[in-house]
Length: 317
Image (cartoon, rainbow, N blue to C red; front, side, top):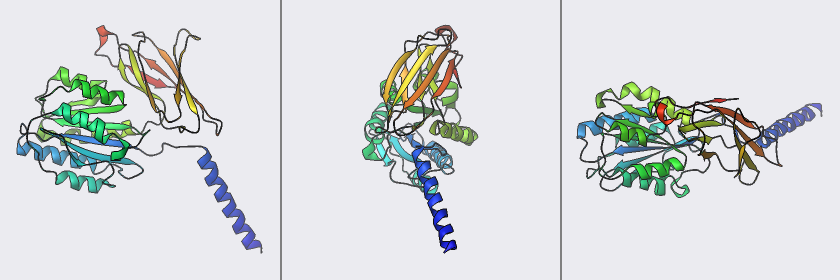
């Protein structure tokens, strides 16, 4: 009977460890998120340029850890009307996404990028299309430069949803317009490169995408003269608790601004802050089901209008 007793004890211990791991809540050991490629497929792009960009996107996607519980990818064409080549829920591997990109046909027509961005917001970044709530979301827009309709308003709506925007221009885009459309700082999220040299930025861009998909802890982005966006991994659920978010001037303790957020929240935008000032941020998860440690960071050097070329920085404590 002793061998069976030992076996039963081992199985009980394994079950207890599994349950204790579940009680600790979600982990962020692997990248997880929704990645949307926005491809200029209009008549302003030559067939040669389209084929090179399509090849670049395939190379970019192939090594990514795509899967139902990891990263999911989607592709939307920019033309007279937006066209979804495949939604987030269709392909479950990098190889499948790469094959789907390589067989995508150019749509031609006008360059209505704003219409495609609105389509992405309403039809792709929605649960019905396979997008998941509470995971990071990234949009990679590859363009030859201009657009036939306004891009700013729909791009801002995506940013307000927490979507990180990367832009790759093949050299004929307006620097000021594209800098405003990309996530801040533009130096990290906007690339100008010749269509024959796209492979040069593939590794760097892929690494930036993975960084955006894997927020291991509370971090600040979209740093502007008056505020910043905060993001964090899913530490709670809607049913397991709530967050208390505090932002205070580092030099003036006791003057914190507080916001209570639901347990399924993974981001919040703060505005109306002083420029060129250090802020201490605390994210306090409140739950009766399990203990989750608070996370803190100090947001430094929020740029003023006179020093807009210097991006803000944030350090986690």
